[in-house]
Image: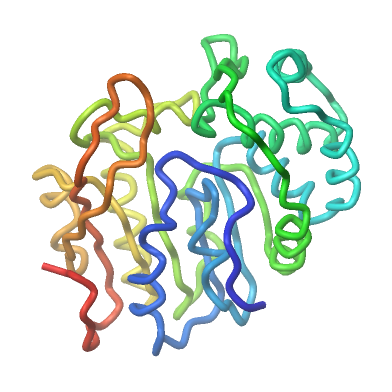
Length: 276
């Protein structure tokens, strides 16, 4: 299916990287597509993927929402149409704990659209605790329907990123976007899941990349521009340095340019995307 945009807001999302990835993969012939740190899956939605896609994340609520859109989009839309977006309704719906998968998916999408900056944050008890966003909301049901079609050939699962190893084959493409453990400023999107992505996890990610290289598959990794990240990954592929605008909100948010590293084993082609 042709490229579309993601149907959720996601702090730390990679919509800004879409032109670079599209250019990087323009001449690449790859088989299946993997995105094990799914988030908003903006890269998946932006690519014209010919074969099977495997999307995963350790955030169970996120996976359930995507599964609901894929398998029961009309029912999810019906639930959303019954929801008001004023402050009182927001806190009432935030307090709910539905067990029905469709209702859980609709609640996730509702909170994502109406919460402050679309953040996903839970307290120590695993309860979603982001405040009301004070914004006018109009749900884009056509986008949800398009996303359902795009997801129809995607496998969705909740597991650790390294679990894709058992599914990978030569010439598959893997897009890796881990939670950044080190960046400049108050990094709001580190709290998107209850588990911190540690330095040990970065080393585990390096071992997964070693496996990807060993079987002849392709990868694109985004990561923080930090000397430790360069030390871990620079020997495992070509490094590109890019800058983006800071989009993370909050009273202590860092505003300005953020430098990030991209690592890949995709052969270099003639491009002019502002790379170093």
